[in-house]
Structures are given as C-alpha cells and as structure tokens.
Amino acid sequence: MAPILEVDRVSKRFGGVAALSDVTLELEPGRIHGLIGPNGSGKTTLFNCITGVERIDRGEIRYRGRRIDGIPPHRIFHLGVGRTFQVIRVFPELTALENLLVVTTGAFETARERALELLRFVKLDRLAGEFAGNLSYGQQKLVELARVLMSAPELILLDEPAAGVNRTLLAELLDAVRKLRDAGKTVLLVEHDMKVVMGLCESVFVLDGGQKLAEGPPGLIQTDERVIEAYFGR
Image (cartoon, rainbow, N blue to C red; front, side, top):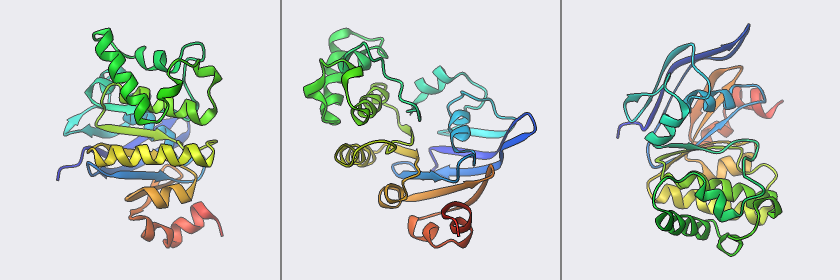
C-alpha cells in the first residue's frame, strides 16, 4: 500500500542550528505512528514542516503522492492534513460547540449536526453549551481534537496529546484515537509518555539531534541500544 505521507531527506536550519538533517520517513495509511525523541530533537519542527508552518531548506514532503512542501498551511489543511498543538488553542469565551463551528464554511445546520456528533465522539456532548475556558485542561484537548476532525482529515498530527491530562480523560482520548484508526484514519503523534507511545502506536520513529535515529515497532524501539542511550538515558 502506498504511503499516505513521505518525508524525503528533509532538512531545516534556524541560523546556525540544524533542526532537521536529511530526515526520511514514510507513514503507512490507517495506522497510528509515534514520533519520539529528547527535547530539541526536531519533533515539533517536523510537524511544522509537514503542515506548512515552516518552509524546509532541502528535501521533499509528499501527501498522497503530491508534493506539499512550499504550499501554505491552509491549503495543506484543506487537502486533508489536520493537527493539534502542544499549547492548547481553544477559544475560551466560546462554547465547546462554537469552538467547532468556527472552522466551518458550509450550511449552519449541517455543521452543527457534525459538531454535535464529534462532541459525542469525544464524550463531551453534555458540555456542548459550556464555555471552553471553564473546561478542564483534558476536556479542552478533546475539544481541540474534535475541532480538527470537523474537516474530516485523513492524516491527523497530534502534538503531545497526553501531556497534563488526567488518567480518566486520557483513556477517553486514546480510545478516540484508536477509533479514528479503526475508521481508516492515519495518526502521527508526538508524545513523551512512553506508556502511551508503546501501548498505542504500531510504529515508532525516533529523532535525536534533528536526525532519524531509529524506526520500527514499539517492542523493537524499546530494546534499541541507541534509543535507550539517546532518549531514556543511561
């Protein structure tokens, strides 16, 4: 099966710092992939390059065989690539429902039905009328995930979805991610919680110093000596 996303020898520098150096990876569609590495290893930079927030210096990024590096973020979004951010970006003075509706351009009633369906999907339908600023941190993350899903993306990038989320809401979030995979979506997530990565992801990519250090199934990554030294510490 053709990869849904191809990152081909991508490099990105910020002044004299090489944030990414010849990074190559492919995402098989319909699977949950993890992206791990120490702080400063280039994970968020890679997310930003995939979604057009940052322009790459060298290499190519292809989504469904189409080259997307160099095109604006809103066009990449409309092609079917959605993402969440490490820092939550909800509108606190809008309700949970309104936070989803702000990204729609179609008929209001159709959009409202879709938004309510997605709030049910993340088990927040009972809080549809609550201001987002009154929701817990974990609930706000679920609202953000539901908002990303409003555009029905095929590739979903999640930046540290488990960070700061209590265990109960985390279980609901991870259940939602699995259901997305079961529905044929492809997920790439950056996460520091190794229990989440190893229990959720079907393949894992490891970055260190802006370079791809390793890739493979979770069990293999856990026992890779290079990963243990670079990420887990010795």
